[in-house]
Length: 122
Image 1 (tube, rainbow, N blue to C red):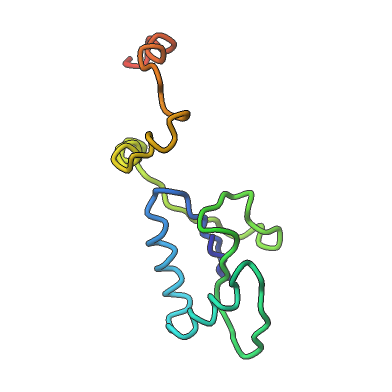
Image 2 (cartoon, helix red, strand yellow; image 1 turned 90 degrees about the vertical axis):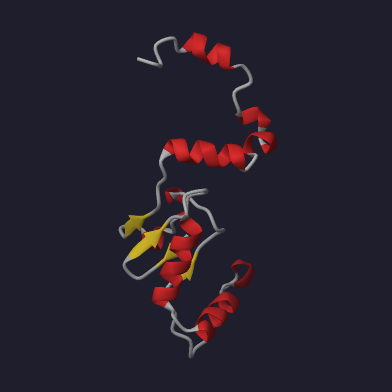
């Protein structure tokens, strides 16, 4: 999650959000030295006081987040995120072998799903 002065970018998993977040960081803090100082400043979730350093964004929490993770001090800002075609997401998860890593979250019996939802093709 990236908190900028005017908006909050929430990075949802498998949506291209890493590229978007990196681009936002580059635009808001273009200097490579500033980015390194910023990483040092927010390392391990601790905020170091660096008086000469003026940053224009803040990383909050881990890489991925949800709107409930937005700090209360940032409520009211515009929320940005990336979305993805659901079918592309399923293809990506399949080729990424997501179904092997999380078998409990995959359909074990497609026939049972079809029986439970007989009109899904209509």
